[in-house]
Length: 346
Image (cartoon, rainbow, N blue to C red; front, side, top):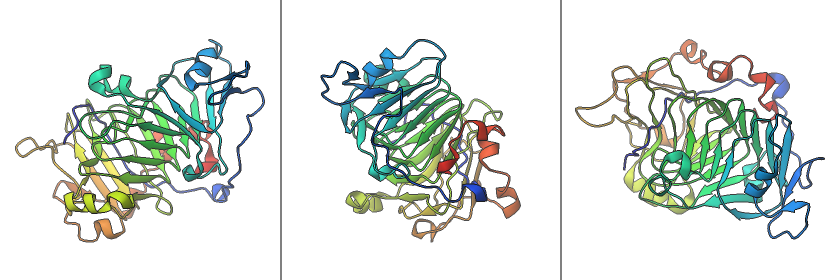
């Protein structure tokens, strides 16, 4: 089903790694950095917090730089972050570069209909600048039926690293601000990467398709808004978890659909696709209301069985190498990205 939310304007791209960044090294993170607030499930220690929301509430209301460290466990709660100062949340992990090693999960089961908006339904909501999160799983447990967001992002200079985001419809709401998603896992079925006015770069992510629908859905008020969703080819993929492969194969989802307006700009660049997509890959909104007049739906260097027999519609642009080279992390989130992005994850 098509989501009722206002999804975003996407460009799914390749970024080129700098040689100096090529040798990312994984580490264990099993103890809190000095000065961190500590979250531990079931704790009775006075200096610790039993929930993430309690630790966030205990942060000073100032511009100081703060950190929160979360010990292994499943934390059933919604977390809403608004404080002005820079904040980093670290999850316990045996391998900082792999979401598969995460030991911390924050989960809730709230729909947009019940909460009053997509944003309010999110398990984790970021409404502040200079936020980073590492090695945390974020889930909205609501299944098929309506919008239910796992992660809602409204800040600038926000980085998500080796995290995992799980939902079904509208999993990741990248709605505003400059943001990067590096080495994450993102799972859903309908419009599950979406937003309206953000500037986002996605690199080295795995996107898991668990049902029929549209991987990403895009809306923007005008051609002046651009969102970039890059994927690096050596580690990025559009895949289907084994448990639902037969179901997804029977229904053939799409990579993307334009929503709300026809100013979407979306580029899949050097993306390896194993998910069994519809062979047209790209979808209109509806017959007679296509919403393709002003879009740029582009592809360059797609590979894998999911695109092997693709017959792309006329409104899709197959980019030349020169055209594709115009899209990078700088074009996505700005030339100052090195000042706030953790380049160990690129």
